[in-house]
Image 1: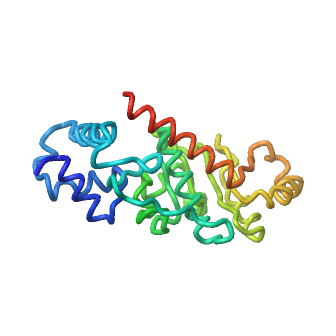
Image 2: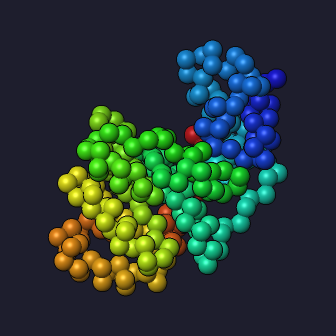
Length: 240
């Protein structure tokens, strides 16, 4: 069996789609000597990208999601489906973080993302690095998505709290403030109708001293950022 055929088998096993991590973990079942080379992961990517450039067996359907050529993409969740939107937006934040070369973590690894894939198929770390006191770490572990620097000591650079209900906004703010002594940016990602409540909350005395560290991103903005990054990445993979 060739590497191309082995990649195809992995995609078939996963109902037509996979992240690179899934391909790396499972290709050995069909191509046992794949890890004989020190740079074996680069070799797998090279085969995958070549097939995509030539419009053959595979295609890219997201920033880092690969699929069989005839796979039909899952529709985006509807905004009114708050449970699905929550994990979908988490997945987008994780993929963008990976694209920007951060280490990525989520408190919801088993949550469904899209196209037969869960969030744990994209995060690059499963545990929060021990960068502070245990009390801080335990609270940070509950955050929706965290981007850590990938080199040197791992500190949280950017955190994302997905607020689909106003009732969860204060909790999101309070978790963020556990990191007020670190150089960390705080992002509240929510439906546009929550922006006014976000601005009102920032005026409260308990948050006012740190209000310049909080940023609001609505769902449409984060989806647009993801889709633009996906388009650029897809074009680059065809050219380079």
